[in-house]
Image 1 (cartoon, rainbow, N blue to C red):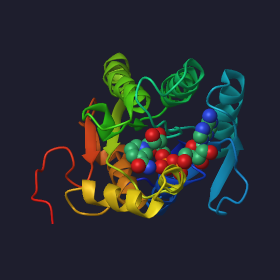
Image 2: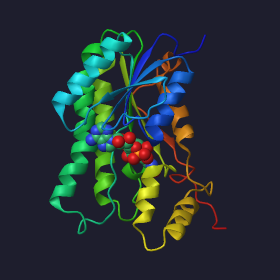
Image 3: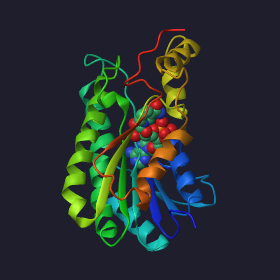
Image 4: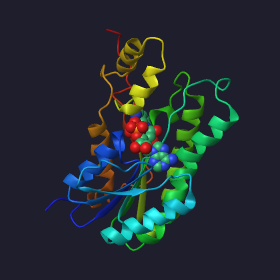
Length: 249
Ligand code: NAI
């Protein structure tokens, strides 16, 4: 027996990076897993894809209901879909601010609202929101992105409070920089992508970026019924960037 046997999970943004690693790890631990993403072609056979955009409420409600119908309910929601932004407050325009907050913050509220009627029927309901160390650390050129993740942290505490008496746990995972396609796209925009990647590795106390599988392990921990007393927390998986001050090599 695995701890997630018999449970159903839905992972937003599960077609790539951290979301895909989480979907596969949840499957390995026994869950049946649906992926909600704007692109669901080419998913591994063990995952069931539902196309939806987290900025479109109608498509979110349709996908969440279809996933619960197909897999027989919903116990675990991983709110992972998100987009990045680089820049100071002078460098992101109003359209970028609206877009990033719509995907990263309002998207989580939309998906969770659609999932709640299903989660209320579960005896092991757990919601995990993808936050970031950017929520609590001043990182350069992340004004918009950090604001969105600060909002995710506040949203996590508020949702955890609203739904604790319904037996629904809500937690966040706050990764440091994770080596995914997201980082590949970001460093490609710098004049020297190799140097930028090396700087991101060096910024971690461990000297390397976090892996998607390491974040997936934290998500599985929070998803598990064995973590039944853990709610309203943010589990940091950051290679030491938040609290450790090591000497430069
Ligand atoms: P990624 O870019 O590899 O994957 C993001 C997934 O979300 C993609 O499959 C994409 O299609 C999907 N997505 C984007 N917009 C969507 C929308 N409107 N509707 C539905 N799906 C949408 O990104 P990665 O690195 O795996 O990041 C996942 C989450 O982890 C994000 O919330 C991000 O903020 C967070 N995170 C990432 C870190 C990193 O360094 N990569 C660090 C800390 C947090």
